[in-house]
Image (tube, rainbow, N blue to C red; front, top):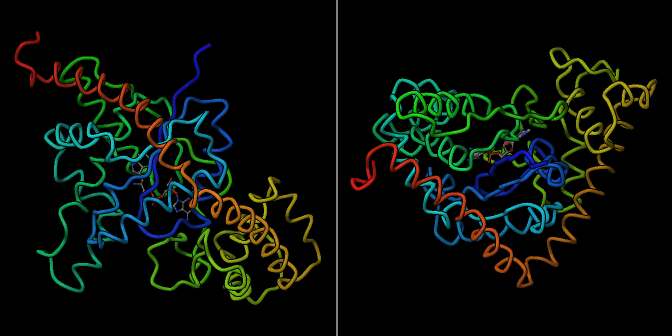
Length: 337
Ligand code: TYM
């Protein structure tokens, strides 16, 4: 039986966080046996807002090494860099011409990010890439005809947009794309900010205490978890609305131990927040030490280039076939019916 296909990517801006790991990477690794996976470093998304050349280059390499260090296996999954497959940008343009500005204006991530720019500089300084970004993401997805797209909760709206663009193209031009479903983990699809647990943990946060990066110094990680915001009740109970900080720590623990929220609550019954933080810290530190050890081996080897070349070759076969079909159906190729 043919395996179902999945496609996903992570933007190459700065450090990968524990949120990226639990919400995305951990699941990629878990699913790579069962599904045919296409996983890429979204470096074209990484230039949406200004970034220095050397920083960008470093981020791309670091992301790839972390994918492997977290357990993605290039013999199972097709792993590549987005810009190595030029069909992503090509399809993005065709989809852009079939997307309305109103649809893009409604994206909450665009509203959040652009409002920050607006507050500092005024509207004319909002990079147009911020607005167009979800169309590129739709192209990333539709290019590979996946049935499922594994992502965290924050990407839900973008997947819905990709689905509507795909449906629109299908009804306008005939059968062009498979319409995918999003695939979010039951637990851990939104890991929260350690300092402000009403927000998601984000690598773009200006306060480094609010997130854990996979390459963080271990002593810093311990301090960050120790200073995570909780509440004054000293009751270890999952209640996202009233106890978001504690619920976040319970979620992290459950995800890293691969147990349910109820099992975690049971484990911590009658214990205090000090113990909770200490045990969460031990789990996170164990994970990070394993990842960091592998990362050091990989980043200094030739493996990365070899694997990427292999991944790009496989991705290119699928992508070039699809872009040809799209160009023919749209009428860009004048010789074809
Ligand atoms: P990005 O780079 O912001 O995040 C990568 C993945 O990590 C998940 N994630 C989280 N999950 C749980 N808790 C969190 N705090 C958390 N923060 C991030 C995200 O949901 C995502 O799955 N536009 C995308 C990258 C992208 C993409 C694609 C994804 C580009 N093209 C095509 C899927 C398919 C992004 O910026 O994700």
